[in-house]
Image 1 (cartoon, rainbow, N blue to C red):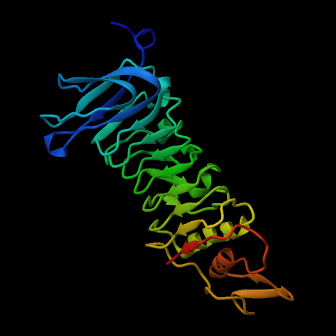
Image 2 (image 1 turned 45 degrees about the vertical axis):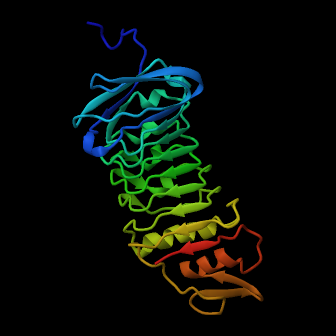
Image 3 (image 1 turned 90 degrees about the vertical axis):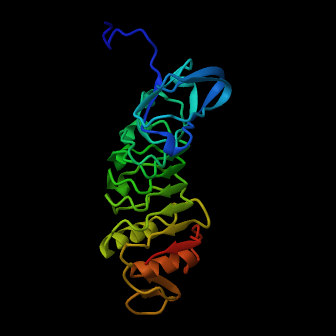
Length: 284
């Protein structure tokens, strides 16, 4: 028997799936950087071979899994896109060796339980929503698009996501992610962090960090959804007037004193500072 240390066989991308006849078509898709031939052994005695750069496999299982689907004939470094969404996937093996897979979409697999660090190559597009992928926020890649909606096993603070290239971030309903600064998301265009179960102090923390970083954001017209089950931010959403929400420190120059006043400023640039204004900030 060959030991794992000395096994000369090349590593292969593998899927463990519970797909059965009631689940419809099992249709994993892989793209490669050059034209090549890939065979998928579906684990039930069937296989399919495709040639090209886009490999859209399709199979209907006669019985409920688990099945072990193995992709043969392609070096893992040649894989650029992995699309295994909604295929009853519970585990993906050797995913971390797909070092050039910049797009990974595995959302809609509720029982998928790989570690978040396995997706570290996805610097363009990572979609793991509605899965049991686990790990801390610091393991997120610096991806342009991160969708991790409804992922209860991801923990840590949003401030630990080091992704300055991120343009689209959806973490809504991933309720074990706690609040923190979002100043690091300088390229952000859209951020969904609603229904996180955050209290008012947590929501205030996020908005205060946004206002403090207002000059760093590079996109004009970004939007944020921070309502849902989250508490409402403190203060009042009103135009500048001396009082609890605003202070005129010098004639014609206004300082927002509450998070809701900060939201007003982020949308309107009250002092004509020239920062990129937000188009929508929706809070409870």
